[in-house]
Image 1 (cartoon, rainbow, N blue to C red):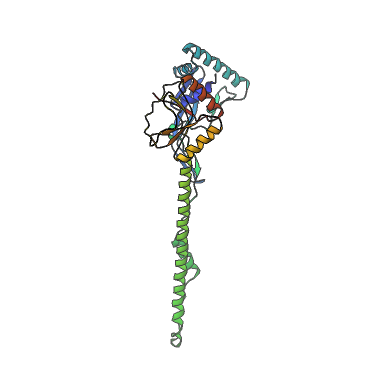
Image 2: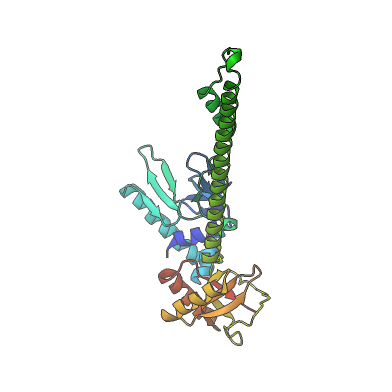
Amino acid sequence: MVLEHYISDLLYRYNCVVVPGFGAFLTQKNSAKINVVTNTFSAPNKSIVFNRQLISNDGLLVSYVSNAEKVSYETALVEIENQVKTWQKVLIQETSLHLKHIGSLARNHEDKILFQPANETNYLTSSFGLSNFNSIPVIREILKEEVVQIEEKIPFVISPERRENRGFRPYLKYAAILMLAFSTGVTGYRAYQQKNTNEQVARQDAEEFVNKQIQEATFFDLSPLELPTVTVEATTTSKPSVSKGASTHFIVAGAFRVRDNADRKIEQLKANGFNAGYYGTNAYGLHMVTFDSYTNANDALNALREIKRTQSKDAWLLTEK
């Protein structure tokens, strides 16, 4: 039994998961962040902490393991206690204990347990599909400062002139004024054009990034495998290519905004030996693709475990009543 797998499943929907006799893993929601130095945008997420004082059995983890392993509550509790003993031995004999998708635990010289959370998994389901990305900085030029610098470099000096030369020299003054106005206008136009170009490039990059993320996104259900199934009433614009007559359990591979991307995914899965098909569109208008469909719930669960282990950990089970 891989206990950390069940703990990871529960952290998606609960803020506290207690391991009886060992401690509790708690989650805290963090808002989106912007790093003004690196221009990095971080999506909202849940951070994990470990509390060694919370060791009383609240029944959540034991009940979940009991349903998942198809064993009695007492048997599941004994298996968890044996796993906890193994973890405690590792913490005493080795430098650290690594729990996949959760973090690492280590015991210091003061007999305190230090926890380092894993950052590769975002347990905030509302942030699915969002990832960190860097934005191109927008450079804004201040034209007024450029004009002041030009005026400082080209000062006007008007000296007294004799009457007999006034017929020619005033034209030089007016010509200098016109040249200065022309150069200032050219500089302002170039700065304005550069500003518009930078903003247009930044906008195009952002739109391309969002479109790519939506097209390549794979929506999955993080509910535990043996918890109550989800009933879906989908309104589709076209008939699904997957037969729904006797098949009530579908293993979903992903959902795509563009139908062509969904068709390419179906061909790829068929090339890999799967009985892939097109399910239809969901409530968000995304085209859903399935690995296979089953009429027997146990066969569907066994196939889902194998697919999550060998193909895609984001696959999930959709059951129709």
